[in-house]
Image 1: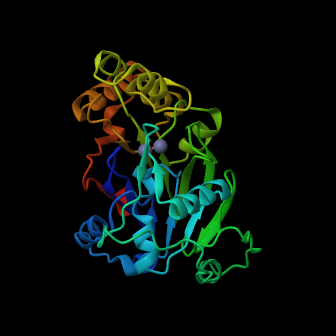
Image 2: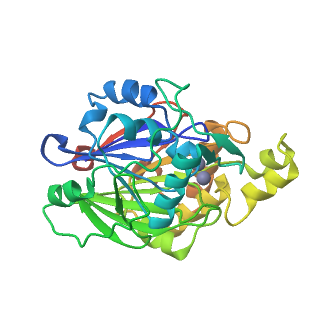
Length: 320
Ligand SMILES: [Zn+2]
Ligand SMILES: [Zn+2]
């Protein structure tokens, strides 16, 4: 299994997840970057967009979906998400507007020709969910409401789906979107868990996070820095609310709760705010929590993800 961070933060989020012989199953985890950026950043790790089998989406905020209009124009790949998220994405495609992480409404951009109107509105497109089911070698009861016209596969929050070599478990997180989800991805005995964009850490989230070899966890802001910073008070309150974003402290408290020496060995701190956090602050805060809990720091490798291409994790590291 290989995981590559292609971008993390409010300017755009996307990960490549690859598994199986020769990495034959390839998924995008969120598509909050332009097709041009995705093409360049994937090429740097030897992957082309035409090899991507599906886009798994956490929620419909622009920094997680703004690449989708162009991707669906140029490639045949289904969007996998909860039905409410799919509906919100389709609404975004129809109206040409997305909601951002900070609650603003922005116009959807298409590249490579931004002047062109959003193309996917009411046109019927091929149902590639059938291809996904076949690739998974299993029969899944079709769940394709007529109202969703983009190529898709419904993955209700709290359910499982196998795409090729990757078993996906989705679980609810706490964020101001239609049906925000985290994901636990399993392949070949390895597990990767993604939790970003959540205002609080719930028992359900901890339950899934504790199984991960690699955990990608939001560490959005330093509380002090947010309070003292330039954001208007309503935005500060929104970020700090139970449906906002996880602070460095909340991330630290969560890790201490799930820590076992035989468990997680890689931790990527994700979705860092450029205004209210720095990689150094996030890393130092996490290390303070771990040291206070007497965690042997030799057992865990921690990185803070940059807004651009960042870390690559390969599950062969598990056996080294
Ligand atoms: Zn969000
Ligand atoms: Zn976000």
